[in-house]
Image (cartoon, rainbow, N blue to C red):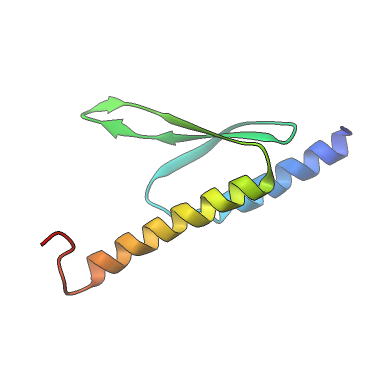
Length: 87
């Protein structure tokens, strides 16, 4: 893989990742070839429990971003509605 091609892949991954709109804290840990590793900074009972996600293509990352954004929109809709979600 040429250096330019690797650079283009990294730019595309970062563009897709930038569309992530959620309260969860995600960061790109590494991009190696066509593989990207994303880490979620998660705290459980005061303990840092980072979760790692590995994607092997732009399509996989795109699906993840779309899914996480939909989850966030669903939470927002529940919180802004007049009905309590857990009755």
